Amino acid sequence: MITPLSRLFGKNKEVVGINARNIGYIFAENPRKLLSLVDDKLKTKELLESVSIPFPGVYGVFSEIHELRNLEKVIDRDEFVIKPSSGAGGRGIVVIKGRVDRGWVKSSGKTISLAEIRKHCSEVLEGVYSLDGNPTPVFFESLIKSHHALAEVSFEGVPDVRIISYRGVPVMAMVRLPTRESSGKANLHQGALGAGIRISGGHTIHAIRKDKPVHTHPDTGSTLIGVEIPFWDEILEISSKSYDAVGLGYLGVDVAIDEETGPLVLELNARPGLSIQNANQCGLARRLEVIEAMDLENVSSAERVAIAVELDTKDWVAV
Image 1: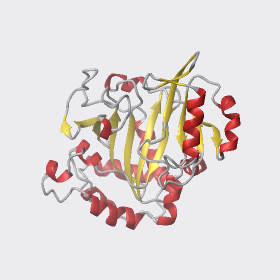
Image 2 (image 1 turned 120 degrees about the horizontal axis):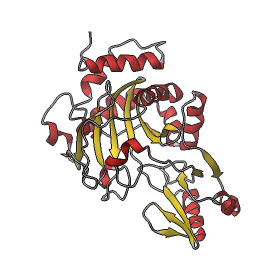
Image 3 (image 1 turned 180 degrees about the vertical axis):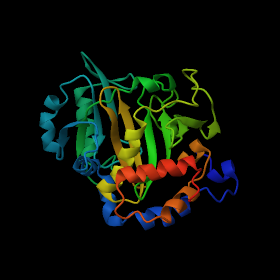
């Protein structure tokens, strides 16, 4: 269970709590009519493509049960990822990492048959894993191969970088690192590690495991502090351009780093969690207030990144 922020920071006024986030930022900055743009992953991909933001390739989409008759052709490969178009918290996602005589091998090491994949896809189409319980398309995505630079601080799975973008300015970041306990998933609630990243330097500065400070990876023994995140400048640019794509002022941008293609957006989140403050041992409030006081109209994504980097070097004190 994630520890309440107040227990970690006391009554630190710089910490943004759930109510402040919901009312002051999500409600105020994210118009309801735009939420569907990020709640639907396929719509998100269309918008990302419109501003040249890279994401994992999609090679199959099913919107109706009867279309599953073509399933075997679509999954005639060794590696792929199955995702619901509308889902949250990783629900309904199945990662396939290999093939065997009797089917495929999931990231957990367990096998899954064609019949089981068909059943899972049917459940997705029926809305079992969707945000609102309504039917949603199921799509098939290329599997990301994690970049070697993060191999020593990750167990089996693919780490991802979460950046909070406020009005297009990247204000806080962390990398989520899979562990044995999290079954190779970059999910803090399941036991993954969170390591805060210095915006101006692109290296990790503090790390947590279940909200308690940790200095080494429990499975690899490697240090978690001072880890350089590859393609950092590109990742910052991607986080800023994502605002241009969807128009949401308070946005979580999740990026994985592929060994061959570099940074790829996994998804955008209109309601990003607050544990990123724990990972950075720092509250969001001052950073958000500094950006809120700025006139960012007609400011490009590159300029917004430059603003973030400069502010970070000055400990987010406006000048």
